[in-house]
Length: 157
Image (tube, rainbow, N blue to C red):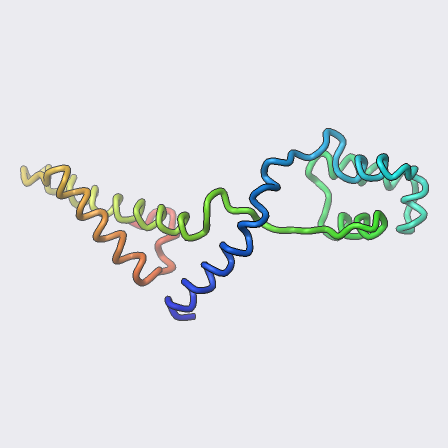
């Protein structure tokens, strides 16, 4: 995929995911969503179990595993259907994917420039802070122009 195509896809995905940001502010109920929805519907564990073809103790196990963050997606989907719900699974970026890429490019650039600055300082050729910041910005812009895969390497410097 070309860099231009990746940028367009990132923008489109950021736009699509932005509608889910409000969900970060909605903490799950203490006993989990399954338990909360089932109770509010007035549905017993046995009734839900009958609807999805498992035992009542199976519902208890699922509710516990969901509340503890151990439930599988396939199980959650099956239970959601039994509750006439749709399981929505997504990742919600803390800012935007584009901002994440920009921060990463700046971090990679800063590590590279600081390594060079450190070597130059050892040789008494220290670069001024303003010049260092300019070099970091320029290198980050260069990284952003090409979006190389190696920018995500843990030790890329």
